Length: 288
Image (tube, rainbow, N blue to C red; front, side, top):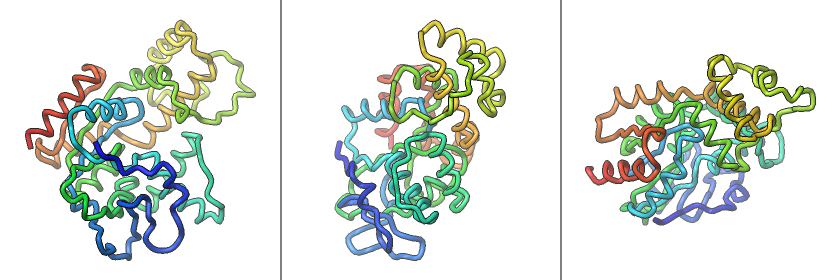
């Protein structure tokens, strides 16, 4: 696997015309032409992982590295930081600064989606790649929701979509177990009474995502596992807010209806192991 991720890319984004993300990847504005020695991303063979937080995208990528030769693009977090959040902060007259609160990041990406309905897919459609990678298989992790996959299907026509799915309860358990520093939100718990059931019910829109029975299951299982009230409320808030912003079921239905089977693979990562899921992806890619 080759990677073109530059971990310091956020600091390299500047005002003006073409924004260089790495030596092989750049972002151009709507009214700009593709610069010499670059090609629009839409002209490349691109594998797009689709799925919400906790479905196993990063794990699948790790396993695929052992079996598939591909070039890894900067992932969703990095492009969100470098392009979406930076642009909106500058639009607000602010000096760009890191945003680690997941709920706040959802607010920024919703604003970007309000300006550009394709959201992250719109940002991808404005990426240009050096022609030296023309023969490479590119992989992006990843897209979410109906608007993003619909935009990608149109503006990135050579793309193939690997949709990874898992129930919300499974995703919550994975978020609690993986202890990723990215999975945080600055919820003010100062007024919380530290009663898990009460504090869970204070999460806006919780009932729209988790039934009363599921809430009781969450309370029982997380208490038994020894998770703190703060941990559970933070991770649960992320799951709820993400589901409010992105409809994964609608994305799956759209891709299945709009594209031929050779362009779409759906894997339930709760039903198979990560190794088996990666093997299904590898075998599917080989069929092309």
